[in-house]
Image (cartoon, rainbow, N blue to C red; front, side, top):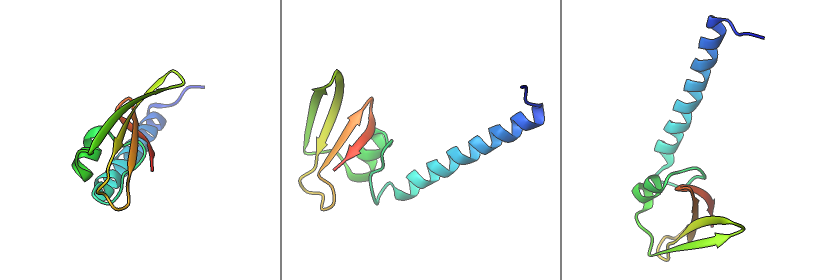
Length: 88
């Protein structure tokens, strides 16, 4: 099955629209909450640097754990490969 050039362009445009929507969502919420998939820079820009940074090795994977004691709704953020994977 081969796509026509027109079909391919429509699919590319849909993908681009989805990417732009997600980027806008992150930009609009960056100062409100931390989202899974945000980069370390996004988190730094949103809420600043943590009080404590730890590196955790578990199950053959390496995580970076940031701890905030001063943030009212947020205590810990886990990163893997510089992206948020878990928020507590």
